[in-house]
Amino acid sequence: MKNLIKKSIYSFYPKDSLKPYKLKLGYIFHTEQIYDDTYFSWLLEFCSTYYEITGARAICAIIPPTNYLLAQSLKEAGFSESNFVSRLRDIEKVATLGYHGHFYNSKTPKAEFAIHCNSFQLKPLIEQVEADLNWFRKHNIDHNGIYSGGWWFMNAFLADMLITNGFRFDYTFSRAPYFFNLFSDQIMSENQVRIGESFYLESGKGKMLCIQNFIGAHATPYVEDFDRNLKNLFSPENENGLNVGVINSHDYDLDLKNTLKCIRHLVTDAGAEFFSHDGLRALSEQQARKTALLDLNK
Ligand SMILES: [Zn+2]
Image (cartoon, rainbow, N blue to C red):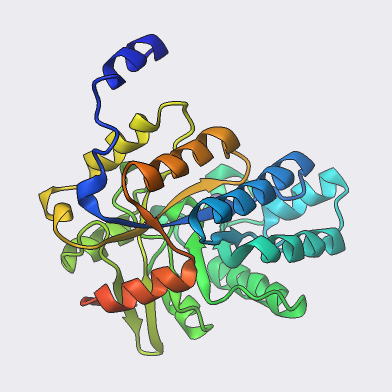
């Protein structure tokens, strides 16, 4: 919609249209370019202001430098590993860290080699997850057992590896069309998991609490865009139950001003409550009734 038309239409759009949904929200970053000074400063400013507005800490799921693409970018930018670790320490003061994985079928990090459900190979996945997790251990960076998937990729093998390695919380599953993933879609359909309903994923080695991603944080001056998109995702059953989930952005596509405007709007007009990871975890543990079993033979 053109801005002028939007302005006119939205002048009739109620500011509190999300109020009936009793939103319990968190915010997660897919944190990918902290070597960039500008993005890094915006990220810290967002997390601090977000905390002032909501009393909640954002989650920053980070890609470790063992990732092929990040390693290449750090080299090109002349950005050292010790600087990278130092920036994570700064993020830790204002946000909760997690792990964000992007995996390739080749050491050349090009889009055509990206691991998705339909291009999945087990061996390169295992190698990269192990390298990433060793990096966290080596530098004593706590990922808090939190995972969120790059390109929204998830499957039984990755989930099983995460559980085996002590991950207990996942923020990858979503019903938003932009975040579609075949495995996630099947798991949620087979187990009749509705939008905003946290659930468990279980392998023989333990289980992981899955908290859904609703939609991306909106980056336009019109907060009504966000309301409209979230309402499009919801069904009538969302009016009665608890709706727990996160909204997200990357660090590099954050619209600092408009996203904070949207957060203020959600608190003030929609009565949304924001939670840190611990709060989302507590709500989800109360709410979760369904357990999806991982099948590694599929
Ligand atoms: Zn990503």
